[in-house]
Amino acid sequence: MTTTPGSAPAIEFCDVVKRFGDNVVLDGLSFSVAQGDRVTLIGPSGSGKTTILRLLMTLEEADGGIILVDGDPYTHEMRGGKRVPIPEKRRRTVRRRVGMVFQQFNLFPNMSVLENIVEAPVHVLGLSRAQATVRAEELLEQVGLADKRDARCTQLSGGQQQRVAIARALAMDPEILLLDEVTSALDPEIVADVLGVLREIAETTDITMLIVTHEMQFARDVSNRVLMFDHGRIVEEADPETMFTAPRHERTQEFLRAVLGS
Amino acid sequence: MSPETVWRWDRAWEVLPHLLEGLRITVLATVVGMAVASVLGLVIALAMRTPSRWLTVPLRIVTDFVRMTPLPVQLVFVWLLLPTVPSLVIGCTVLGVHYATYMSEVYRAGIEAVPRGQWEAATALDLPRSRTWLGVVLPQAVRKTLPGLGNYAISMFKETPFLFVISVVEMFTEAQKFGANTFSYIEPLTMVGLLFLLVSYPTSLLVRRMETRLA
Image 1 (tube, rainbow over the protein chains, first blue to last red):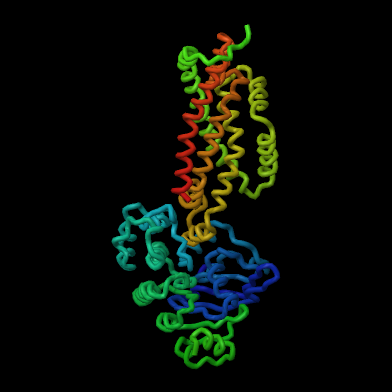
Image 2: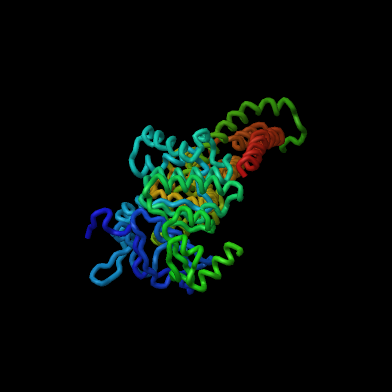
């Protein structure tokens, strides 16, 4: 089954179950994200937000249910009423549309800044090194690090490393970008730089974004939808304005009070 | 005639050229042995990571066996098994295989020391498995193994006298030969010790520097 681009949701979770041992993190979760949506996931730690991103990056494997990207089954599909895994080769064609930025940056320390960015375009997309370098330089310009091109990643500050990591993810031209607490490991004074870069990307592209963050102001500025999670379930869903000023659910009110400290 | 017990400088100078000739073979055996050990050790370490028990269980048994038996015994065993192969070739190979079993553990530790986030970033970029290993994991792992590699090189260097048992004419064998001919053992054996020290001590300093720089 194939779907025409644009008609299917960018991301669709159908009854997804994820357990870590006896701990059920997601218990039959279903939700979908439209193409071009910017969705922020909020909720207390352990509520399953990060697990959702990790499932979408195939860093974890779901124990039940189906995940679709652009309508294409990702890691498992239903065949004759049975849930069967999808071979690695087909998984990879879907995974290529998804990019991720991590809390701990995870740059490759054995490579320079530029090498980090061209690595995947050259070895995955098959671009020539020259083509990939041109694109990488544009992206470095965009994140304000054009002069760090040949630096070792270990010589950069946390904020600079995270901006390189953002450029590295964008170099693959992802349709979906997953942002996993990307400012949590940064000093407060450089958080703004990184968020500024992400704001610009949100304004100038139509990449679908799934954001896990504790920066509520950022969530408010960038996203058009906020999902409040608790114990692996969506307890409330609203546009950011409503969610942050007039949350309906008691759990949301409690959580926002704790986070915003008001 | 009983062996001489008084130190004679003329004997010491006389034996030196022979010992230097032997040192050449000693160094050669170490370099070739280390090359074999580094490559084979990595192959073993990678093979042990495959999920196939048909590969890992026999491999574990073989490497344990090699590690639990003495090097001289292995040397003589292979030497008697392959009478047509030159003893220096056997010496280098057995040294290499023996040390490969230790080197594989150094590589294993190096690979495990690469943070999980590195693997995850490679997955997120959809890098193929081969590229994840060659471009990301191994360059970082090998860097961490360099000091271990250096220490085993020194250790192997000091064990080359065992090649005596399969009559490879390295430094120690030269000294024995000289002693047998002249009944002077003190000078050649002392010189052998000094020559070993002269090579291994600076090397160990180099390894120590590497350790602090890469740490």
